[in-house]
Image (cartoon, one colour):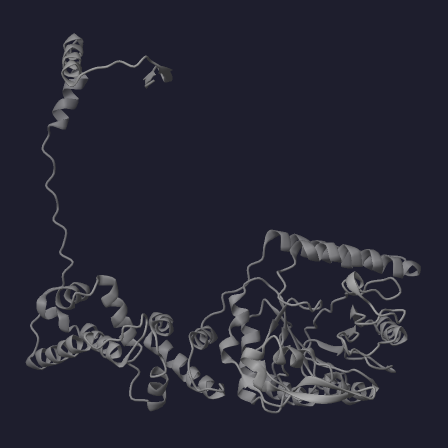
Amino acid sequence: MPIIRWDREYVAQPAQTMTASSRTKKKAAAVKKLPKAAASPSQVEKKVKLKAPKPAKVKKPSLEEPVTPLSSEEQEELARLEDIIEKSNSEVGEKEGELSSAAWKITDALYKIQSQNLYRAVGKTFEKYSKDRFNYSLAHSKRLAEVGKIRAVGENPELKAIVDLIKNESMARPLTKLSESELGKVYATLSQWVKWKEKQELSSQTIRAAIAYHADAPGPKASKLSTDVEAIRAEIKSLKGFIDKTNTKSADESFGVIEGVLSRLVDVKRSTGISWTEHTWNPIVGCTYVSEGCRNCYAAFQMGTLMAARHKDLVDLKSVDEGGRKVERNMFNGKIKLLPDKLDEPLRNTKPSKYFVNSLSDLFHKKVNDDFITTVFEMMEKAHWHTFQVLTKRPKAMAAFTKKYYGDRTPPSNIWLGTSAENQETFDERLPHLLETKTALRWLSMEPLLGSVEITSLEGLDWIVVGGESGSEARKMEAAWVRSIRDACEKEKVQFFFKQWGKFGEEGQELKGKATKAQPKVDGVPHNNWPVPTKADNVSPSGE
C-alpha cells in the first residue's frame, strides 16, 4: 500500500490504478482550479529587482604560465631530456615501486625540465606539459620530479654513493619533503650510519630515523587522566611524611597498593615483562660474557631461539658445567650489530614512557664506537618526555664517556645511568665507577642476586633494583640477602625496588604456576619505589 504525506504525517492510502493519460488530465484539472492571487506592490518590486541585469562575470586569470621563448641552448637541452624520457619509458622495470636505472633517468630528466623551467616553451604548467607530452598524470609527474630532486646533491661522491643506495619509491618518498639543505644534512648522516651497519645498505627505516634525527621532536601527549593521577601521586608523597614512624611498614604496604591501582589506570601498553620499565629499545644487539651474572643470560637464549632467524650468528652453543653435569647453552660470542634503523623508535612514541636501553646488548661494549653512543644519547635527549634506563656491566667505560660527552653541561633528568652487580665481587668492582659517572640519577641492578653483599655506604646512589634468577637452571637467591639490601636502602633513604624472587620463593621453595606471576613481596610487603632525578651536576659524591 503506497504511503503519501499529509499534514506532516504519513497516512496509508488504498492503491489506485491510473494510466499515464489519466494522470496528465488530473494534473491539468488541478492547475485550472488554483485561484490566481493579486500581486502586492512589494511583490512587484521583487519581480522588478529580479529582472535587473546581472553584473558581468569577471574573467578568471589563466593558470597557464606566460610563454617565454627558449634560447637555442635550452631548446637543445629540452630535446635531449625528452629523448631520455621517451627511451627510458620503454626500459622501466615492471616491479611495482622499483626504481631501476631507467626510472632514475626519467626522474632526473623531469626534475631538470621543471627546475630549469624548460616546459615554458609550450605555455603550460609543468603538470599539463607532462600530461600532454608523456601521458603522465598530474600527480605522477609531480612525484617523479620530486624524486629527481633528491638526486641533485652536487658533486660530492660520498653523498652520491648514498643516493645510489636508494632502491625504491618507499625509500625515496620521505626525502622528497625535505629542502635541499635538509637533504644535504640527512645524506651526510646516512653516509655515517651506513658504515655502522653489518651490510652497508639503506632501508626505509634507516632513512626515516636519519630524518627524525635532524627534525624537531614531536613532543609528548599527556591525557587528562595521566595528569590527574600524577597530581594524586604528588599528594600521596606529601602525605607519607605525616605518617607515624611506628607504623611505617603498614603505611608502605597501603601506599604500595594505591600506587598499583594508579599505575593500572594510566599504564602504557607494555612491550616487555620487565616490571621496572615499560618498553625496551635495542639500537644494538650482541654482547660478551663478563661475569657470573651472564651465565644464564635471557638475551643470549632469545638470540638462539626466538630471534634465531635474524640474530643466530650472535651466539654459539656451548657446553657449560652445572653442578657436575654438562648443559648446552646459547652464549654470546662477542659479535656486535649496530642498528641505526632503530634509533628513532622512541621519537615515534609520543606517550611518556620508561625505556630500558639495550636489553639485548650493552651500550658501552668495547666494540661500540663513541660516535654511535653519542647518537644514542642525542636521541634520548631529543625524546625528553621519556625516561631512559641505561644499564651496563662496563661502568668504567660509561664514566669516561659521560665526563667527555657532558663536559660542563648538566645531565638531563630523563637519562638514568646504572650498572649491575650480582655478588660482593662485582659490587665492589663496579660501584666506584658508577659513582664517577656524570648523570642526573645513578641506579644499581642486583639481578640476578647470586650472593650476600655487605654494604657499608650507598652514598651517591638513587635507586636499587633486586631480583632473583629465573629459568630452568636458575640459582637460588636467599631471603636474607634481599632483606639486608632492603634495610640498607631504608637506612640511607635510597629507593628500593623488588622485582621478583625468580625460580625459588622467599622460603626457598620452588615456585610454580600462579605463584610465579604473583606480586613479589618481601616479608609480606611489595616494594616498587621509584627514584626522583636530581637537578645537580652529579659527577661524584666528593664533587670531583
